[in-house]
Image (cartoon, rainbow, N blue to C red; front, side):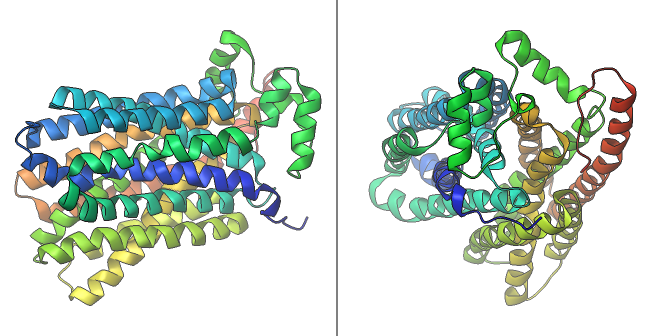
Length: 440
């Protein structure tokens, strides 16, 4: 069957791209203005409290991601997108108004809840609306927005904060509620599967036809009611996917450990390797640029060879790149190594998300994605902590080695998913009433 164009779903992809762009901007704003906040004696922020607040943000993202799957099945995809954007915009406003660390931390926690809920919801929508054979490409295109937002946040921190103060950067974080929410309210459609679950068959068929999708079947509809939402969680451990689910969690944990660990400590590790301050900060921009390119390459490659294979290979290549970054290389050569490592590093994690499309049935996909991203957030906590512990103990040379080990563990976990999925199909076929699962 020939692969269809993404053009019919360009509106859905474009709107999700916009809100995830603001997601990436908001996540990276804190780090971009950290030096200015520490210099503000009136705020009273210390390096220790700054680290604690960073953990609050990540914990909020973890809770938001875990709740997102069930909330979208209950409220619908579109309302969760809207309220997630409103929530992290409100959190940014609280940060701009904060007079002390506690109030500021409350704002970052609120923002984390919205940020954590938005990502899996947008991923689920893009996967549902993407044509068959174009899911990985659509996922990769979506995630270019996150890194674009991160680069914009860095630019705001470098330009706006020195001239007008760090609070104005957080006021810029209110823009999503003013720009994106009206567009989402006006143009973003609801999931046909969710509409079908609510008995709105005609509306579900109309939206499916408008976007070139097959009419939704009852199996694609998420279960209704509190019991149905609980059953959606239990379904992640049904015979068809009981082994694949924890492996996806491990792969996501390793991927986000790498993403957040490298993003947080790359400049400091590079300084410890003998590079200048300006060059060390520039490496962070270069690795994000590589991440944008990598999303486009990984998406097209995964549509041809499968997201599991691509994710596993990308994890291995990330490990190789991490080891190379720990070597003493010339500045120009190191820029090339950092760029290429960015190509593999960020998209290895995103292809883990794309792999959920091959494991979970449509009715469980939002819940499955929510738990894969939520459990993976633990890696986002551990990654910066590992880097911080190594730096604090004068063991910077081991930083890139630790990241390489995480890459190899992620590759091993995601590589086993196809084997467990095939085993799950055999178990499901032997069990009564088990739901079928597509092997990765």
